[in-house]
Image (cartoon, helix red, strand yellow):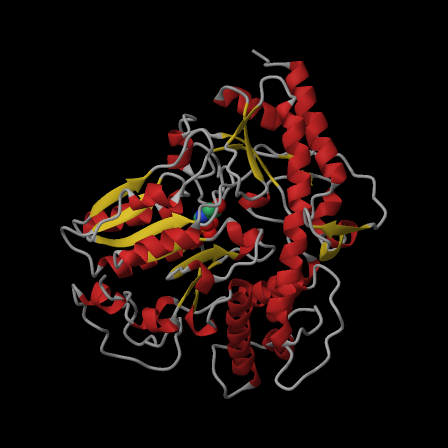
Length: 498
Ligand SMILES: Cc1ncc(COP(=O)(O)O)c(C=O)c1O
């Protein structure tokens, strides 16, 4: 097995000569368009009847109470957008945003703020926001804050990393991508490999079940593999591949593992170290935050990479990868989103202990959620995600059973390990669009498309057009599910228009 350093050093690159301290300076479904997934045509949602606050105590199958009570009405009350009345099953394309996140963004823009520094209060505020955001993402992902890189989107970050990594690739080298991945974790690697005259190897997956197994990846690994790019969960059919086994297989041949966690991070507590990901990418707008992305890696590994950058910009890590001035207001919003998740379920009162300082965001005064002692946030995130997983899985099972009974509807992908994201095929692209429009007219947002998981859609025999996607988020409730199921049944009963 090659060492990581050897991997990066095989085709040595020129390290930037100059260094200073501070850097200065987002589907529509089937066609080219913005990377950000967008829903189908707009509709006037049906106003909802408010449901009384009712907490559900969640129990893991076969065990005692495993997660704290989940009060979906209280959660919903935090999302101003939900008062517009739509039932949102479009979370995999971007969730709605809680009040605390909007307030944190506005808060950061309502006070004096400068470029990062420690001289003036305005400089310190910017600097504090950046550090607070890195620690929030580190807590969310079980990562090292010193290796958290901010980017405009996962796509932009992955392009940047692919170019930086490809500086060390050459003819004979191989890069593995999968048929299950979103195009953002495919095309940047395909294009970077082509530019470096390296070879792309494709890992397929089981079309019947939707399962991508470690054997699918091992089948295309070799001693020449330099990088394996693999999703932690499919945004199209929800499949969760065995990431730990895949990264171990990559490491066994001396390759690096780049994991797309955009879809998974909205549904599960991630442990980047435990997953064995050398790089783990996610997007804050999928988990209640503003529109931006992150890559988490070890600071040491980042230090071995030399992305293109401006000469006067700092060569420090992670700033070396963060081209231009950081958007402090978005970063304040990201911290608020992570804190919001940490407080999603009731927590035992925090008893201050030595070293349990408030989170830096609270110290910086950006946002409105109460300070969470930094030492407790990861633990609280774990409690929240345990509750979210059980809650979303129960809603998913209800939808699945209902869809199975709907004439003409076929559930695509039934991997045992998956997120609460369902793809339903009504037999043709036109019909899938028609059902999505039918639902949208009734205030149920469940768009149709391939959602940029183009290879997966093609591999599944759905061409470039995919199907109708139903994605759950923690704010979905029984009434949402009833509206969705009623809409799907009515669409089936109405039949195709042509
Ligand atoms: C699984 C997955 N990967 C990558 C992306 C791209 O993320 P971004 O919009 O941050 O570029 C998406 C967006 O939908 C996604 O769902």
